[in-house]
Length: 463
Image 1 (tube, rainbow, N blue to C red):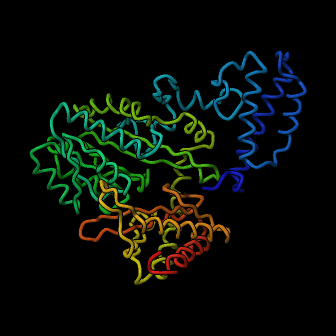
Image 2 (image 1 turned 30 degrees about the horizontal axis):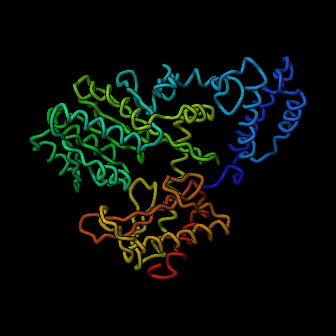
């Protein structure tokens, strides 16, 4: 991933200017106040001179701001706590009051009434109020929910979680959670999910993943309309790859839990700041009551609570902005569409290129490299090691051509992210999948990135 000094995005320059202005304001106040022993006015004046030049790499300014914070804590009695420097440096950021209050001992985030973050979905209103919790990542949100379901099953009895095909990391999580009273089942289509929900002798929780087929708003509506709360007491929708403006059809007659991985700051040329959320809609049923009590606990004990710094920084940048997000997603999906076409044409015959409807990423199924051995096995994976070497070369070659490509498990916006995993989809031999998340690029950049992927992958049928 690029460091901030490698980026020249306008938002980076604006953030650097804002940071410099904050530091100058702080230093001016310290210079006007009586100096404390051990801090010379010359030190303060020298630091003020450094910050008078805003034409610095952002990463250097961020690092230097932490030194200024230390200087400020030594220089004035009024700066006796880091709570007085909640952004990078300086006085308390207004966002600290506007976005959230924070209990530092228990790590529970409490959103202020009226905050934009209290309504991450623009279609929710007073008639469908949401209880919202934020987590460090989308996967942390899913982990907290799964643990909460396990706690509920321990009290109420066995529960079946049925889903469509899952995002790879979610599938790994569910396989890893060998829970005594919770069984995870993957279905092949929405009608199989509905059939399972109506015929099961134990309560069924439906989990729909928007990164895979039949994981969209229509599928959520189908489950809600074709099952009853007695059969399916909870529906969960990971809608990361769906628009926040796209509500599920119909009013939920039972708890509906919305899980999302939110905007990442690499869109602004900064190191990314991941954030996940859980929003519980509707329902005064027993499951809703239990989830409201358990989700904060499960976030807390797993270290999954959101960082207040992430929320403050996002708020300082004017996020969430739903109109801006829709425009950004259009660019992202257009870039993935261009990249997919180039990959499909250039890799025809040797590889299988798969694009899902959401177009958040493109999959290249590398069929001549086996997937991982049994997860419990100690057998080495030399093909994977060799594949990693090839992708490292792909990354190096792209950067030599000024193309922003990085090996990363994250969705990319400012860059193209590469990640790979072993697929064990039903009906197929285990094989390796390269996931290419084309960034929010112009068409010619996306095409150039795709041609580089084709070039490196085509240099041999196997690494």
